[in-house]
Structures are given as C-alpha cells and as structure tokens.
Length: 154
Image 1 (cartoon, rainbow, N blue to C red):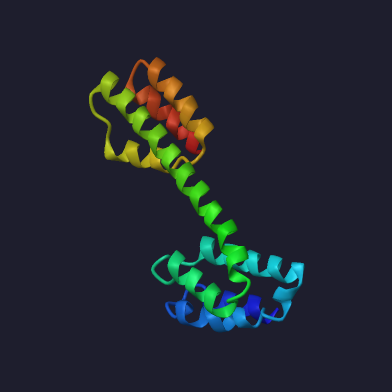
Image 2: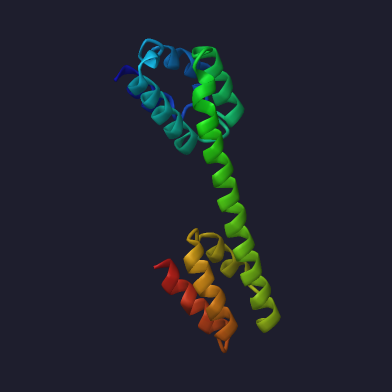
C-alpha cells in the first residue's frame, strides 16, 4: 500500500527519477513471491503509461529497477520492453495508415488542411482509419470526407 501511495504522490513530479529506486526497495521483500513480482510489474506499467516522459524515461525506469532489485529486475524489464516494442509497432502502423490516407486525399482533392491532419492524428483505431481510407476513395468532395471524420471522432 505504501508503494502505491508513494507512486501516486510522485508520478507527476520531476523528482520521480530520483525517488523511484527508494520506492521500489519497499517491494524487495515481496519480490521473492510470485505475487510480489506481479505487484512490481503492475506499478512499473502504471509509471510507463502515466508519468510524463520528461520526468522519467525508459532508461531511468530500467536503472531504478536494476538498482532496487538487482537480482530480479531482469525478469521484469523484458516483459515491459516487449510492450514498448509492440506499442512502437502499433504507433508506426497507425502512422502509416494516416499517411496513406492523406496521400489518397491529396491525390483526389489536392490539399489537406492542418486541421484535418490533426483530426486524423487523433484517431488511434486502425479499423476506423481503414474505414476512412475507403471513404476517401469514394467521397465526392473533401467536405464529404471531413463529415465522415467528424462522425468517426464523435
């Protein structure tokens, strides 16, 4: 409980990088048990997803785990690193879908506004982007396509 409260307390503060090893050391006794490692992994996932990257980056997190749990950190970080890879691949895939969509729109309607580009960046569902790609191929005007984007964002 103490670890969870400390993480919640420091998650948005710039000094989380310095405090994390001390916080994780509270879990050292639990790390000998399977459930303890699961607690640690859950906390690390929360940090990865919630903390601003300016406050603590992936290398900072890895260093904190190595310092706090020198004998067990190697078990946790590969799992989290796999998620980072998947996340990067997913983001790359979404970006590629957006770029193809914009190319279709530029080919058909010449220009794509920054507002529309931003709207497309806000869509993180590959199925929605695929659907919009089909609509971009069939739309009779850019305005018709923009209406489809508004519906997708609603």
